[in-house]
Length: 394
Image 1 (cartoon, rainbow, N blue to C red):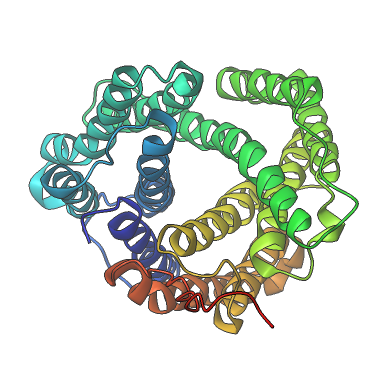
Image 2: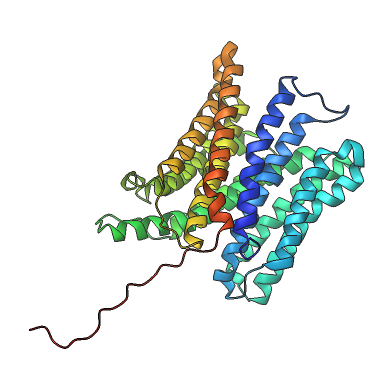
């Protein structure tokens, strides 16, 4: 279990996504009475970012680093300690009313701070300068958590900017990592099928699309209400939508492990456009736009990456079972309903409930289906025994 980072962290991400949304919903509708001073909305936003997404990010990055650096994977007691930090953070933020804000901050911040230091050590020791931008992104993600706790312990009113910083920095990470794996996996899959149409190679257009996204994120963090920020969001969304078209998304519908990657990236492009429209018009509610990014892009892409990486790194066939396909469909239903909820007026609470049930079912089923993958040894593919050499055929 502690030989590969994806095993404990992907399972933790699945479990926490399964538990955290029902917990928040029961608090939202008043079915769960919590201690005075417990901010349910802040808890929900914090835990979906730093608990759920943080675990998935740790599992993916720490699994990828050995391929980037050629160094041995983080495992054993070091990995176990990092998992313990993650769990302590979840319990601490939930029980801050009992243990105090300072103790909660120390326990919660230990996970991402240690993760960032560990990634920095591996990249620097391996002289892997190409992936230093990934370290920078993760460092800003971690800084967002520090800013949240600065407000909780009374240093400064920085929780909102901290949540905003980490949310949109995570969008950059999806664009960077997605921009590597989606076209690469698509190309490999199409080549094996003998397809004539292949994704466009990474080039200057991809660099421009990423640069515009980064400029938008800086503007969104510092001046979220400025019209220019909204215009940048629409521009970034359009560029990343066109980037996705360059990867020939229409060619991958036959394999759910492929189309879910493209769908996750499509949610990112759509979310950016919706965020821009929410700032420029009254047509799109801000909550619909942000949930297109979080429930849609983050939720879908994390499921897609966890599913594929878990199968690939355990020697299993890279194809979705019917159960895994159901997971992807449920997650999509959850995202569509959560984004559509503000438009339903008097029926919006039904949409929230059904979306939460679909989300919980998706990640609960994912955790059940992949539990053997996370806990059992790697599947070794046996090579067929060659026939004895009996001389030339007659």
